[in-house]
Amino acid sequence: MRVNYQQWEKGKTFSDYLDTHNIPRSLLQSISEEDKKLLLEIRSGYKYYELLDNNGEIDQALIPISEEMQIHIFRKHHSQEYGFDIIPIVYRNQEYFGKIEISSNPYSDALKATNYPQVAKRLSMALKGMVNTKKLHKGDEISFIYMQKTRLGELYAMPKIKIAKIRMGKKEQYVYVDEEGYGYSEVGKKVAYTVTGKKKVVYTRRVSSSKGKRFGMPLRHPRVTSSFSYRRWHPILHRYRPHHGTDFGARRGTPLLAVNDGKVIFAGWMGGYGRVVKIKHAGGYISLYAHQSRIRVKRGQHVKKGQIIGYVGSTGRSTGPHLHFGLMKNGRWIDPMKVLRKKSAAGTILKKFTKYEDVTTTKYRKIEIKGAEESRKKLDAYLINDAPSYIWGKERFKIKLQDEEVIENEE
Image 1 (cartoon, rainbow, N blue to C red):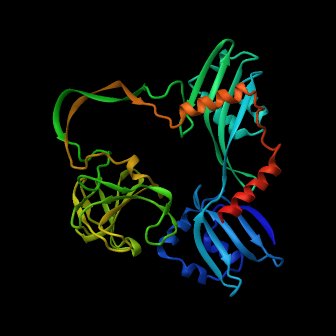
Image 2: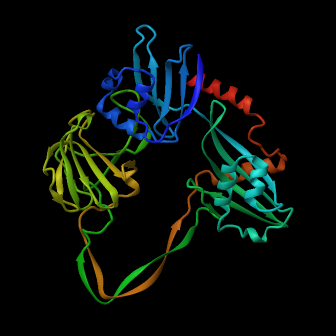
Image 3: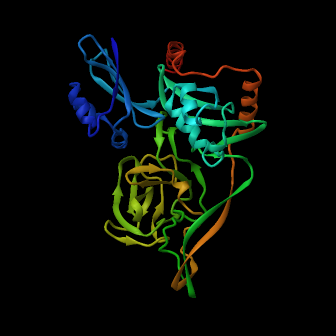
């Protein structure tokens, strides 16, 4: 056996992959309709593994569909037929410590210290707006902690900076980094940010806000029972599956509301989703309402925000009455709760007309970064113990062996 480490080509489909390796198309026919939708999540540039026999034929293949889940193709040795499954990706997520002494700029010095361009980019991103790099002098220090996933000794996914500490002469400053990679000088406090837009003046009147771009909730008095996840244990299938939506608990017959204005593009039965309504909205959004007991709209119908489009049920693959609500943007599933508002019914707002002025509004939001205090203590401990700064590549073979042990234990 030998292992191939490949990169998915642009424009390549799952069917093309089967044909290339002489895997019968019957495998495609055996895949459920729900899992077939996940085949569209394979993106160009994704790296995948193949295990080939002496004849160059596929024995197994692992093809990612997200950072957490992957397609598993395997040959059944008792029958020589191929099987298909979707399983979690096994990887190691390890903490690394870095320390650089400024000689030119943070990016160049971090690259030299870690031998890893992505860490240098992430560190520069975290420091942006927090530190005036022009005031850094030779001999100043920047220390930081970052997390890096590895798989079979190879870098996997982007590194994540957790915290950085800058020493400029006798002055020291911590920078706490959020999940998106942006840095903050403090956590647990409100920070100000400005929003610039147009303000209408001269006269006002009260108008309906139902045509606004903000989304409402898909039912009144929402109660979330299962959140959006790329990796969730399925209560019926008893296997890991992505959960591309949010489940709301509700009694059978509870009215379902359109989350925004749009056009109904599907109304009918959809496999494990049961009775489904799909609505296309402006901005590249499509909303999905599954497991309905009764549908109240038809395909091609235009609906308003807050309009009743059906009723809660338990049709399809369901453990009980609830709404599975999904939201897509530009063809990709996104977490609905990052978009939906708490109220879905159309309200009214005071709107000004005739004259427009540029207005800058100051708003505030509280910065919460999980584990910030723990990360600060860890970074100080690294510095007190004078830990060596890690350089990627020095322990590559050792990491490869450790990764293989983790995968053997998991699988």
